[in-house]
Image: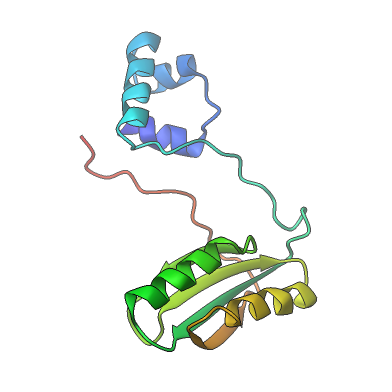
Length: 148
């Protein structure tokens, strides 16, 4: 749907300009946006910040393997990771390890501190870190396909 695609690229667009872009009058356009928000298609609006300008120069991806695959170990890991602000993304994955974390830090000293917090989480077995040398492509949203 064009409304979702446009808002994803420019959440600051005025309703009048959005309405023009999707060939609607402002009132029905606003109604559709409100409906998309109410139905959960739009989760919120945010500004993208420049991490490097804010001192978060280093990014690392860390593979985590847990000692066991029980629901309580998964839950313990999840609760601890949610409390570490430098972990900016955490995905449970299938394959050779359990979780893939994205960590954003100022420097190697802070990376060591954050990794120390992670490996101290009960149930953590092994970890492997991959430092990012260059960002090639960032997630800039969801491709809107076949949405009715």
